[in-house]
Amino acid sequence: MSFQPAIRARIPFNLSSNNTIDKQTHAYSIWLNALFTPVEFICNTTVNQSVSNEGTTTKTLRSVAELNRWYILRDHAREIFARDIQSIATKINSDIDINHCRINPKSDLNFSARTVNRQALLNFISQYNRIWFRLAMEIIFSINIENYQQMKTSIDQCLIQLHNNNVSLSLNDMNLKKSIFNNNKTASVQIRLTIKNLIIIVIFLERAKLLRLIDNDPCLYNYDSKFKSTKESIDILSQDFISSDTNLLRRLKLAGYEPTYRQTSLDEFNYLLTNNENKLWEDLKDGIRLTRCAQILLSSTNEYVARYDLSTKLKCPVVNLVHKLLNIDQAFELLQTYGHVNLTGMYVQR
Image 1 (cartoon, rainbow, N blue to C red):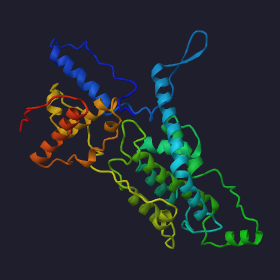
Image 2: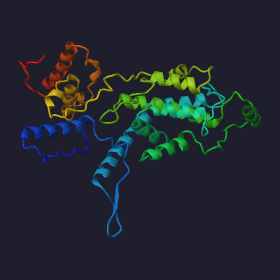
Image 3: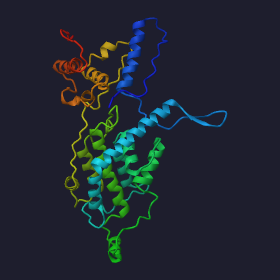
Image 4: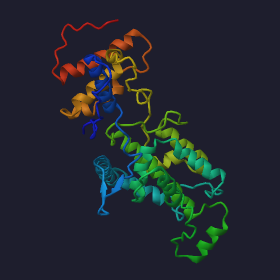
């Protein structure tokens, strides 16, 4: 899968400067920024529509391309969910079921409007990158989300089920049903369903991130997130919503899942070229940015390069000259090995 964006940035050559080098440097900066951080089509895929004189509605080429990319991505995500997550989700559903109660939510949970639990749930969701969480919502609930307002509505209606208070229990014994409702230590079916879906979303997002499902591979968690790993997110979820008599991590391991993903400082590295003086070479002297540039340019012709894990060899943050030279060596190694670029005798300026 190539990291190159489907829609390339428009390169303005009609600049006021007469210096051809400045024009080309500026154009390359725009192009490289489009490669490093493509337009986040997932955040704003509402189709722009214009009505012609005949009253027919047409879609802009950009909107159609963005929607097609999203639909292809979503279909791939559904295949991954059915292949890797469905069996785990089935076991979690059995464990949290009110008949078994091996995973017990807190008995006093209430996700109604203006409650502490609801705010804690929304805070938990807000730690995730909106792109990834939208993907999970569309996969789990088979819905279409086109903008941020629809995202909030979907969280209320599908995840929290704010307007669905008539959830019935699937119990045959009426006496058992009455005893469960009379027992204040047992969470309702609606609460259990919300917690189950939230756990499945966390598991699916880790799997999707590890497979780099989205082309430009954005961070799974926001930069200011309170947790930066799946294990930490499960710990917070357990602390806020799960009863103290349930070891959530142990139950998930028995279901066949163990958290492994951790977001590093390299994942949060800002690759954007921000030099305002059109000195492209200054930005590309950074070994991390140069290695990423080489990976993107070579990924369309080599699948291994596309899946190359930068975190295994790159040093981030760079704290000394040795780290800087090691990072530049990684970029040169990619260019020589897979790009067939002869860099023999190349001198690295210190």
